[in-house]
Image 1 (cartoon, rainbow, N blue to C red):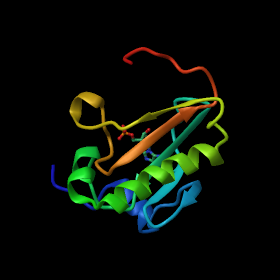
Image 2 (tube, protein in one colour):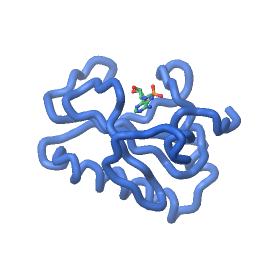
Image 3 (spheres, rainbow, N blue to C red):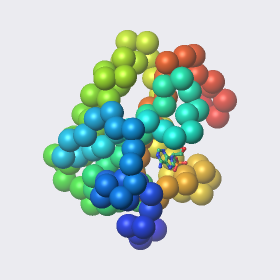
Length: 118
Ligand code: AMP
């Protein structure tokens, strides 16, 4: 799928839509999910304009990939789920139910998570 900058996360990066920000650096922006599916539910979106995980890996340098992954770890620490545990989810494509076509990791935690579909 070709990247379309009209999506809601691209608008958040451009500051056109507000977010409840947790963390930001040159590679990533993290904020709370507007419809949380767990006690802790954050999104870490890439600054890169890419649709999903495969698009990101294909079009990013090793430094950009590392920077994004490190940002996800940083957010688990800020959210204090790094000791208690968490799940990272990258939805990709129609079968996953991906709604927003801009790369984002869900970080879920803060409670025992359901294991259905895992
Ligand atoms: P996905 O289904 O993986 O594409 O996930 C998209 C997520 O973005 C959903 O969990 C939504 O609740 C969340 N979401 C959509 N719009 C916003 C927004 N403006 N601020 C925060 N989270 C959002």
